[in-house]
Image (tube, rainbow, N blue to C red; front, side, top):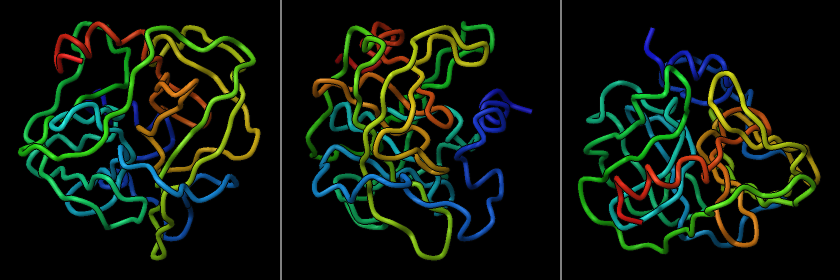
Amino acid sequence: MRHHQRLAIAAGIGLAATFAVPAGSAHAISGGKPASSAPWSVQVYSDGRFACTGTMLTDRWVLTAYHCYNDEPGKMTVRVGDTRVGHGVRADVARIHHLTDTNGLDDVALFHLSKPVKAPHVRLARTDPPKGAVVDIYGFGNFGPHPKNLRKATNRVTAVKHDDIIGRAIWTKKLTGDSEPGDSGGPAFYKGKQVGVLFGPNEYSSVAAHRSWIRSVTGV
Protein backbone atom coordinates (compact mmCIF):
# COMPACT_ATOMS: atom_id res chain seq x y z
CA MET A 1 0.00 0.00 0.00
CA ARG A 2 1.36 3.42 -0.95
CA HIS A 3 2.16 6.07 1.63
CA HIS A 4 -0.71 8.39 0.69
CA GLN A 5 -3.19 5.51 0.90
CA ARG A 6 -1.98 4.72 4.42
CA LEU A 7 -2.41 8.39 5.19
CA ALA A 8 -5.97 8.31 3.89
CA ILE A 9 -6.85 5.39 6.10
CA ALA A 10 -5.24 7.07 9.10
CA ALA A 11 -7.01 10.35 8.38
CA GLY A 12 -10.36 8.65 7.92
CA ILE A 13 -11.38 11.56 5.72
CA GLY A 14 -11.04 12.08 1.97
CA LEU A 15 -9.72 10.27 -1.13
CA ALA A 16 -13.14 9.23 -2.35
CA ALA A 17 -11.75 7.66 -5.52
CA THR A 18 -9.70 5.08 -3.63
CA PHE A 19 -11.77 4.40 -0.54
CA ALA A 20 -15.51 4.13 -1.03
CA VAL A 21 -17.71 6.30 1.17
CA PRO A 22 -21.42 5.51 1.33
CA ALA A 23 -23.50 7.99 -0.66
CA GLY A 24 -24.95 10.72 1.46
CA SER A 25 -22.78 9.85 4.49
CA ALA A 26 -20.82 13.10 4.52
CA HIS A 27 -21.23 16.73 3.75
CA ALA A 28 -19.24 19.94 3.74
CA ILE A 29 -18.18 21.39 7.07
CA SER A 30 -20.91 20.61 9.58
CA GLY A 31 -22.27 23.75 11.15
CA GLY A 32 -20.64 26.98 10.11
CA LYS A 33 -22.18 28.83 7.21
CA PRO A 34 -21.97 29.01 3.41
CA ALA A 35 -18.86 30.78 2.15
CA SER A 36 -20.03 33.82 0.20
CA SER A 37 -16.72 34.24 -1.63
CA ALA A 38 -13.47 32.29 -1.78
CA PRO A 39 -11.91 32.85 -5.22
CA TRP A 40 -8.70 31.09 -4.08
CA SER A 41 -10.61 27.87 -3.34
CA VAL A 42 -9.97 24.63 -5.22
CA GLN A 43 -12.10 21.53 -5.69
CA VAL A 44 -9.93 18.44 -6.24
CA TYR A 45 -11.31 15.61 -8.39
CA SER A 46 -9.98 12.08 -8.86
CA ASP A 47 -11.05 10.34 -12.06
CA GLY A 48 -13.96 12.77 -12.34
CA ARG A 49 -15.19 12.30 -8.79
CA PHE A 50 -14.93 14.95 -6.10
CA ALA A 51 -12.22 14.04 -3.58
CA CYS A 52 -10.80 16.96 -1.61
CA THR A 53 -10.40 20.68 -1.04
CA GLY A 54 -7.34 22.82 -1.79
CA THR A 55 -6.04 26.37 -2.19
CA MET A 56 -4.35 28.33 -4.98
CA LEU A 57 -0.74 29.36 -4.32
CA THR A 58 0.02 30.68 -7.82
CA ASP A 59 -1.67 30.48 -11.21
CA ARG A 60 -0.17 26.97 -11.63
CA TRP A 61 0.22 25.58 -8.09
CA VAL A 62 -2.39 24.11 -5.73
CA LEU A 63 -1.77 23.21 -2.08
CA THR A 64 -3.71 20.21 -0.75
CA ALA A 65 -3.31 16.95 1.21
CA TYR A 66 -1.10 14.21 -0.20
CA HIS A 67 -3.62 11.49 0.61
CA CYS A 68 -5.92 13.09 -1.97
CA TYR A 69 -3.65 11.78 -4.75
CA ASN A 70 -4.70 8.57 -6.53
CA ASP A 71 -1.33 7.51 -8.08
CA GLU A 72 -2.09 8.89 -11.54
CA PRO A 73 -1.71 12.64 -12.10
CA GLY A 74 -3.48 12.25 -15.44
CA LYS A 75 -6.67 11.32 -13.59
CA MET A 76 -6.53 14.28 -11.23
CA THR A 77 -8.33 17.52 -12.11
CA VAL A 78 -9.33 20.66 -10.25
CA ARG A 79 -11.94 23.37 -10.42
CA VAL A 80 -10.89 26.80 -9.24
CA GLY A 81 -12.51 29.96 -7.99
CA ASP A 82 -16.15 29.08 -7.34
CA THR A 83 -17.94 28.21 -4.11
CA ARG A 84 -20.39 25.97 -5.99
CA VAL A 85 -19.46 22.32 -6.39
CA GLY A 86 -18.91 21.44 -10.05
CA HIS A 87 -18.37 25.07 -11.07
CA GLY A 88 -15.24 27.10 -11.62
CA VAL A 89 -12.37 26.92 -14.10
CA ARG A 90 -11.35 23.32 -14.83
CA ALA A 91 -7.70 22.29 -15.20
CA ASP A 92 -5.81 19.01 -15.34
CA VAL A 93 -3.08 18.16 -12.84
CA ALA A 94 0.21 17.68 -14.69
CA ARG A 95 2.56 16.84 -11.81
CA ILE A 96 2.40 16.20 -8.10
CA HIS A 97 5.18 17.10 -5.68
CA HIS A 98 5.56 15.55 -2.25
CA LEU A 99 8.34 15.45 0.32
CA THR A 100 10.20 12.16 0.03
CA ASP A 101 12.72 12.37 2.88
CA THR A 102 10.40 12.43 5.88
CA ASN A 103 10.56 8.74 6.88
CA GLY A 104 6.88 8.25 6.10
CA LEU A 105 5.72 11.41 7.84
CA ASP A 106 3.91 14.28 6.11
CA ASP A 107 0.60 14.77 4.30
CA VAL A 108 1.08 17.87 2.18
CA ALA A 109 1.21 17.96 -1.62
CA LEU A 110 1.64 20.51 -4.39
CA PHE A 111 -0.32 19.97 -7.61
CA HIS A 112 1.14 21.59 -10.71
CA LEU A 113 -1.62 22.45 -13.18
CA SER A 114 -1.40 21.84 -16.91
CA LYS A 115 -2.37 25.44 -17.61
CA PRO A 116 -2.37 28.70 -15.67
CA VAL A 117 -5.62 29.61 -13.95
CA LYS A 118 -6.09 33.24 -13.03
CA ALA A 119 -7.35 33.41 -9.46
CA PRO A 120 -6.42 35.16 -6.23
CA HIS A 121 -3.78 33.34 -4.21
CA VAL A 122 -3.68 32.60 -0.50
CA ARG A 123 -0.92 33.97 1.69
CA LEU A 124 1.05 31.41 3.68
CA ALA A 125 2.04 31.81 7.31
CA ARG A 126 5.65 31.53 8.44
CA THR A 127 4.71 30.65 12.02
CA ASP A 128 2.10 28.45 13.65
CA PRO A 129 -0.90 29.99 15.42
CA PRO A 130 -0.69 30.12 19.23
CA LYS A 131 -2.70 27.84 21.48
CA GLY A 132 -6.13 29.38 21.96
CA ALA A 133 -6.13 31.15 18.59
CA VAL A 134 -9.34 31.13 16.56
CA VAL A 135 -8.87 29.88 12.99
CA ASP A 136 -11.21 29.98 10.00
CA ILE A 137 -11.70 26.65 8.24
CA TYR A 138 -13.16 25.91 4.80
CA GLY A 139 -14.25 22.79 2.93
CA PHE A 140 -16.33 21.43 0.05
CA GLY A 141 -16.54 17.92 1.49
CA ASN A 142 -19.34 15.85 0.01
CA PHE A 143 -19.48 12.36 -1.49
CA GLY A 144 -23.25 12.01 -1.65
CA PRO A 145 -25.75 12.61 -4.44
CA HIS A 146 -26.56 16.13 -3.25
CA PRO A 147 -23.27 18.04 -2.96
CA LYS A 148 -23.00 21.02 -0.68
CA ASN A 149 -21.20 24.16 -1.69
CA LEU A 150 -18.16 25.57 0.10
CA ARG A 151 -18.70 26.22 3.80
CA LYS A 152 -16.66 27.97 6.44
CA ALA A 153 -16.52 27.76 10.21
CA THR A 154 -14.27 28.59 13.13
CA ASN A 155 -12.18 26.31 15.34
CA ARG A 156 -10.00 27.01 18.35
CA VAL A 157 -6.38 25.82 18.41
CA THR A 158 -5.85 23.42 21.30
CA ALA A 159 -2.22 22.44 20.60
CA VAL A 160 0.61 22.58 18.10
CA LYS A 161 2.64 19.41 18.51
CA HIS A 162 4.25 16.45 16.80
CA ASP A 163 2.03 13.77 15.26
CA ASP A 164 3.53 10.34 14.58
CA ILE A 165 1.88 10.20 11.13
CA ILE A 166 2.21 13.70 9.69
CA GLY A 167 4.85 15.47 11.76
CA ARG A 168 4.09 18.90 13.19
CA ALA A 169 0.35 19.37 13.43
CA ILE A 170 -2.17 21.98 14.54
CA TRP A 171 -4.94 20.48 16.67
CA THR A 172 -8.27 22.28 16.94
CA LYS A 173 -11.72 21.94 18.44
CA LYS A 174 -15.12 23.01 17.20
CA LEU A 175 -16.42 26.51 17.76
CA THR A 176 -18.97 27.05 14.99
CA GLY A 177 -18.37 23.93 12.88
CA ASP A 178 -16.39 20.71 12.29
CA SER A 179 -14.51 19.35 9.28
CA GLU A 180 -16.06 16.47 7.34
CA PRO A 181 -14.90 13.87 4.78
CA GLY A 182 -13.93 15.68 1.58
CA ASP A 183 -12.68 18.72 3.46
CA SER A 184 -9.23 17.05 3.42
CA GLY A 185 -6.59 19.39 2.04
CA GLY A 186 -8.69 22.38 2.99
CA PRO A 187 -7.21 25.37 4.76
CA ALA A 188 -7.15 26.81 8.23
CA PHE A 189 -6.51 30.57 8.28
CA TYR A 190 -5.22 32.71 11.12
CA LYS A 191 -5.08 36.49 10.71
CA GLY A 192 -5.66 36.14 6.97
CA LYS A 193 -2.85 33.64 6.29
CA GLN A 194 -3.08 29.90 5.73
CA VAL A 195 -1.59 28.06 8.69
CA GLY A 196 -2.83 24.52 8.11
CA VAL A 197 -3.77 21.83 5.56
CA LEU A 198 -6.47 19.45 6.81
CA PHE A 199 -5.27 15.90 7.47
CA GLY A 200 -8.08 14.43 9.54
CA PRO A 201 -10.90 15.61 11.75
CA ASN A 202 -9.79 18.85 13.43
CA GLU A 203 -6.10 18.13 12.73
CA TYR A 204 -4.06 20.18 10.28
CA SER A 205 -0.56 19.76 8.86
CA SER A 206 1.51 22.81 9.76
CA VAL A 207 2.12 25.16 6.82
CA ALA A 208 5.02 26.78 8.68
CA ALA A 209 6.75 23.40 8.94
CA HIS A 210 6.57 23.07 5.13
CA ARG A 211 7.22 26.70 4.28
CA SER A 212 10.77 26.38 2.96
CA TRP A 213 9.91 23.31 0.87
CA ILE A 214 6.85 25.02 -0.64
CA ARG A 215 8.99 28.02 -1.59
CA SER A 216 11.65 25.79 -3.14
CA VAL A 217 9.06 24.14 -5.40
CA THR A 218 6.70 26.98 -6.22
CA GLY A 219 8.78 30.10 -5.70
CA VAL A 220 6.31 31.62 -3.19
